[in-house]
Image (cartoon, rainbow, N blue to C red; front, side, top):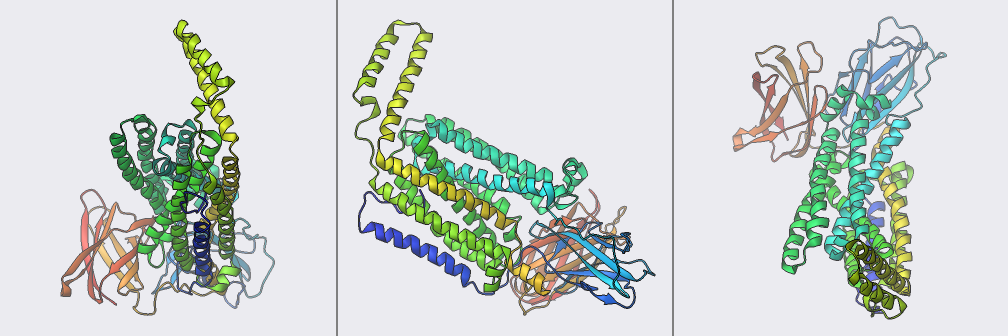
Length: 640
């Protein structure tokens, strides 16, 4: 069953109205995607330029190579490599220097002096702010182009066997989430009797197991996925620790903790709840499970929103809740569809009322999906050319086409739903030879030992199930509904795969920017980026360093904040604790606390930092270098 409105009968008036509503939702989604304005969005950093540029021929050897990106990135020690024509390192192999100024994100590496003429290869790899690994390579020549033994890397970051397994785990995680949340919602909202049905219990539990296993795999593979690409590094404890200090690592750990709470929810749903017979008690427990389960489901959905596309760029405070709603609507629709399919094929007891209740849930889910999908597409596509000329845009068109097919099949499901009725004769009361046999079994069990009685009870249960299945299969409306729901489920599997691919694909806007070599327009013209340098000394060992702060776009409203800490030796420096606070003393506003997330060694960031009005803001920075060594420094900056 899919996006259908509740309907007690095949009314010729209500059918066209519901079909028109579904068509309107689909048209809104399609036109929202195609006519989205060219508003800026940000996700997946892209290389927007370099010095020397790709293919350039320079007269004299440069002292350094610099790379510019569309947004903030995280780089490791060996993220930028420059190789001479023979394949030897031409750079000094020092950690890339952060040369970011204003709104331009730029990194550079120094080159050895006296480099000979020839063609040089620059290979780079980084992690964008939305957690996805990115990489690339280009060449430049000194004096004149020459032959080179260096082959440009054919495998992108996040590719290879590790990338394949990671992507499979990503898909499995989405599928498990859909079955866990959608199956539980189906039992609580549509068919409470399903709590005692073994096939429904298996469906939800398998969803939990799939999501848990996939999350563990993604956590272990995160280090090689963004780095070496070798499976052996999955058990590198230092690498795992570095993953836990990042935003994606924290999201995966949070998901595992929430899955512990989900396990308790499942135990209550299919244990205590299923065994309740008092209607008042069951009603109270239903409310408690709905609230608790809703909180857990929202939290699990938020682990995706906080670490992927929605967590970076403009309007993150809106984009992340929208992303959570989108995921919950997908789970309610597709997970409920899978639950209905299992109920129709594996259980004889589901009635027409439960099917129609799911119709209402599915219809509401599609409305939410249409609204949230339009907004998400506006952020990630931005133009007609990006919609039709990029991989992200093409996948988006394919997703809309699949939704159209799904809704078309749902129309047939709705017709079968309108004809669906419950059997007039209960299986237990069905006349015939089987009923007589059942009575004979019951009479025979009165004079036998307990073991024999148990065997006869199992035989009676099998006989009853057979009778129920015979009556169920003889119902043409129910059989037609099963076939149409099966077709919906098949399309839904493909739709989920395309959705998963979208989450790991570079959005169309940034792909166009990379092709055009233009920087990201993530900041409005108003305002000016704020760049600060603040030395500190906590008084303890290795307690001296410098804090560098960038606030972009440096205006009222939402800003992105990046903090770098360099030690006294000029190298990135990690500290146990870093906190910031903004105060506008002239207006008695603040202090407004900011707790940035660690992106890489010596690099922290915070998105959607709200600055309510323009003025001379005091920025307090608290740095703790040990359990007892801490200092707070401050500096004023004009913002807005």
